[in-house]
Length: 218
Length: 109
Image (cartoon, rainbow over all chains, first blue to last red; front, side, top):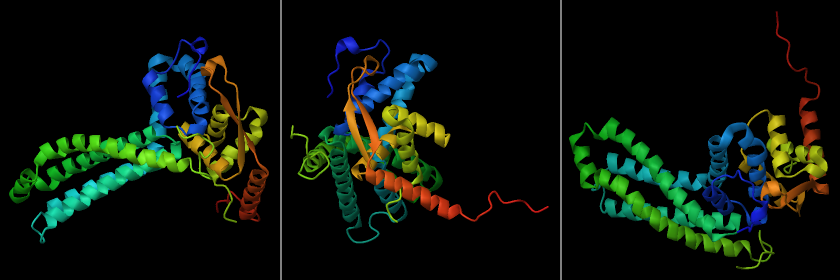
């Protein structure tokens, strides 16, 4: 991480956690220039015009923009997998075919593991640091599950709530407890898989001829 | 030609040419926003700069930071010879597309 001379610090500054988060989301080659540009804009233009609270919000939006750009495809991938599983469980419930529940369970687990590893690897390669991989996988899991939960709420109101057979299957297969509890557990696992993928991506990015080939392996 | 930069890439490259020695991230972002007349996310400009540099169309160098930036370095961008050629090609392509067409069309009474 960049070390900044304390004497050079200005009194107005975005939240330190947001600045730290940004350093996880920019490529190694721009670890000074991009946070520096945003800090300059914050101090010279945004803070004087909008005040502390709205300037902080502006900075936060910029950080979220970097995060979205890095993770959106994995968020979509994970949300799509969960939504497909929900649709299958609702309209073709377990028992529809031989071993269908086990097959679905295995398929959705492998899909999630693959998505989180891929997210970690991609972010680690793009940014040249493993921490970006952790952040990408955790975001893919948390936001993907949130989107899927939104879909599940709509499906519950439209199809499941008024159908006793489907309602029974919904509660037998875990109900709201699983819909809300599972993402918390999976997001912790996503952090570990993201770290693993991030390390792989970081390593590949520093191989000869690759993105950060000139950076020492640290 | 497949290597003609897209509209957003052109906006970034033209901003670099226009800014000359002052072409660093924040100034480029402001110029692109002004020319495109819309709010552009900082991440969009930085990822485009990164991509163009990886393609060999831009070059960059670091310069010391100021107190306003917390001492963090500035990265100044410039066009490479390949970048100038790509920008030439994109302008020629655009002019060829519009040549001979009266625009905006006049409405019939």
